[in-house]
Length: 88
Image (cartoon, rainbow, N blue to C red; front, side):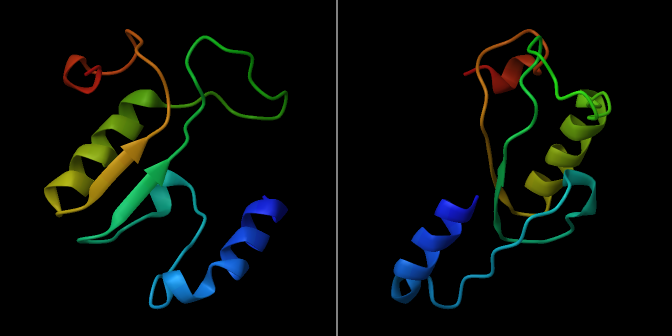
């Protein structure tokens, strides 16, 4: 994360007027924005103190973001956990 922050500082002129923030997916409420999500990958080892990830709640919130005009990018891979329309 620190390296990423350092890179953002170096590229400051290119991202003027851009607001970046880090939040849990259920704390984001925005319109006409770009949202990047990196949820836990299904069927992989989770961190010991991390609660179970609620994929159904996440999918519901992503649908709402899209409805509000947001562009949503999600890191991951094809898996049966994601809705069929997302595995493209």
